[in-house]
Length: 69
Image (cartoon, rainbow, N blue to C red; front, side, top):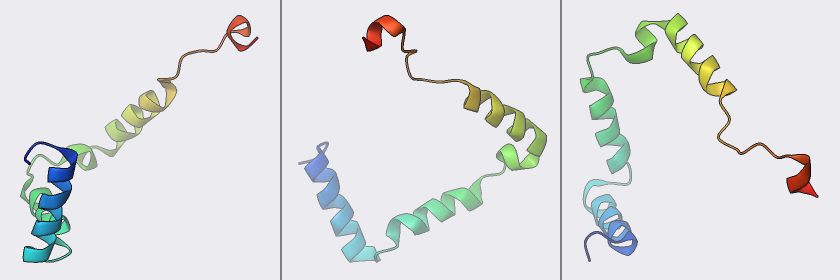
């Protein structure tokens, strides 16, 4: 059945049987080669600053003394 987890696994199995075990690696590589914008690699300093900002932001809630007790 389309749109379900089991359906997705079944489709992945079929794709790998028809086109080889590296099917998803191949289509991912095609997409990566097709890109023309350069991404962060074009500006290494920007990538460094952005990574530092992301590293400082925590998605975990802050634990207080009352919450731990």
